[in-house]
Image 1 (tube, rainbow over the protein chains, first blue to last red):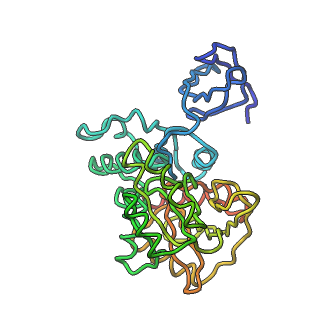
Image 2 (image 1 turned 90 degrees about the horizontal axis):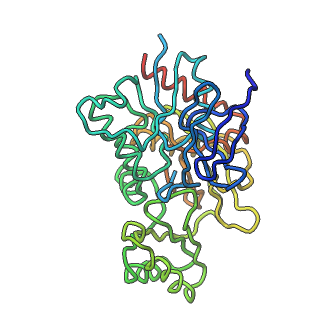
Length: 61
Length: 283
């Protein structure tokens, strides 16, 4: 199993981020601005991230 | 031949990641598809037509049923079925469906107004539980122990922004806050555990992380869960039961159940069970 880290930038505060292996669709908190970020895409170890709500208003399952 | 399966959800959490990881050994390729970007409705459902099946894991109580309904109409196999998801998303509808099949559910009253609320209190007496028709994870589920505080609790319901959110059930407070959570895959219970209130929160919802204890398989549990599955169809469900003096009653059924808690308590390999079930359906 690869342990290579992935990199990206927070789309909100623009902080450069280095994170452990993570899959498309997973979320994590930006350590700088604390917003929840979702991995939209991974290309050559580079993450494309989007800010999402911590939970959606209509979550119910 | 490897089958392509989409997990439809707004994000990947612990459960979905485990399902993706378990898939290759079962001859499946499972990938995440964002439930907010499918734009379904076009003939043939082009955004999902390359998948052999959709595993709807939307936590949203609006998206899951809509996505399943339109994908199914386009001929894409969907788990759970649109009928099952639409029933599970609405606590009143689900109880009606189960009652019609003579499956025991808690006594309840539909509350759409303060007048309904007052009548429900009169008929059921305290303690009662007030819970939203649409919702889950224990959110806004309120235990009302005293009639003198009930009216002020309902003030908060009236102040919610939309009638959709104001629709509630009132039911007797059963089982002292504990419940039995059964994880069903296909037609079988693959794990069952009892969740009891712990600490400062009376709610026992598994999603709240309360302490759990393993539940020995009980013939009465198996019987009522079998009846639920017979009504909703084979699928992947979290069936929540209350134990009463008259036997078990079905509190609710989750169509996209979290299973981290019940898996850690029982040691059950739920991702493999789900993958095997999907493979069986597609073969």
